[in-house]
Image 1: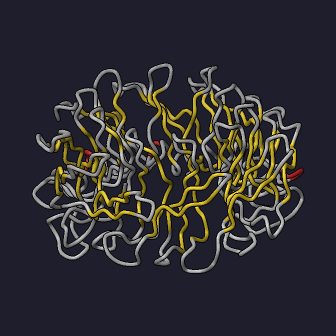
Image 2 (image 1 turned 180 degrees about the vertical axis):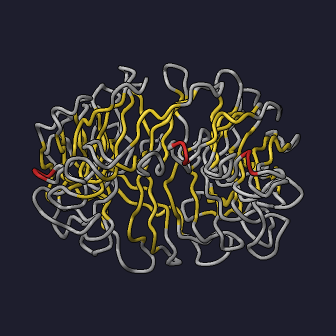
Length: 529
């Protein structure tokens, strides 16, 4: 398919790299992220579309496109029949042999999903394994991304079926041989079921994972199994009676001490969730912390734990002074728990090590609407209000701040400002200055409602607006202290239709890349340069 390019008023070229959807028959609804191969090309999948199906039907595709927009190629169109699978939903990985490997949620000979591989040139497509091939014992519906270990084998999970009908852990050679059930989950044994999360390769060489349901008390489990299928054990049964919590959230992390750490959504002393510590050999599980809502510590943790510096960091979905969640820090023993701040958006860590972001102090606002710009120390002892937003400054600073190479912080507000259509602002980390670089206008020709900021390699700030522009369908802009320039206005229809959706990125070639939600020839989205 030929590229469609348009020159903006300043000569900047906007290029739709590819339009998804019927009648192009090259796929639609790309759900998984793109992966850049060792050859520099971008690879991805679409859940639907392709030559097999009508309208917006079809069973999905694997595609390739270069970063300059040339060479778009459908590497494979899934048929949904005949054994090659349908509806790929997980991301691709590039194996050690250079081949792309992935899974399909459905299709295959047994209609329960497949594991496949394909060359980066579109050749050598092969179904490595079809689940449900005349028998349900081999598992079905693989949803998680594959993991390749140093032995060259691919490891994964199936959410259902297997010998007992409750899911499996499996391994498979990249040549399609050696399919092995590492383990079949069985509710009669109390070992959990529906393992939908990815596997973790522990420092001891074993595979670890969680099940959200099942176990002796049906509150989920942590399991361990050797890569050779030997030594399966339920490392912990969440029971609902002790203070450790129930329903493990978002998998596990392994600390530098070899212990496993995780969070439960519910349970704990106050039934608001907990952080727990588990020995890798299963000998002992201790609650590190139970969330209580008291003192603003929050409740019901949702995100995975982090612990790069030896402390544990995480977030809660509720609680805190504004009841919109908290960012917390604690030691691995649970001592020193600190709610660093009431905060529901992303944090940015500056070069000085401090955390920066929008938030509130002692004031309840609606989720995503914050009145202050804050600086937080990682020890939780210092929270500085860098700036209190007024109506003219803008409101809804729900995007992460970014620190420019000049040391200043930059951010955007969804609305507010002198024209109530959003702003781009500059802020000094030492609170000596706050400057509105641009106030967006509500008229048709000016963009409004900014949604992203990126520092280009030329030092300029680039971003997108979801509305406005000469066609009212969003814009791409650049801004600097001495001026604002609208680089591109999206159309309402056609191949250049907006609005832009998702974050901008800058490729190795210096071009800006992004996606549109409904644009493209078929109104099902496009990738642009």
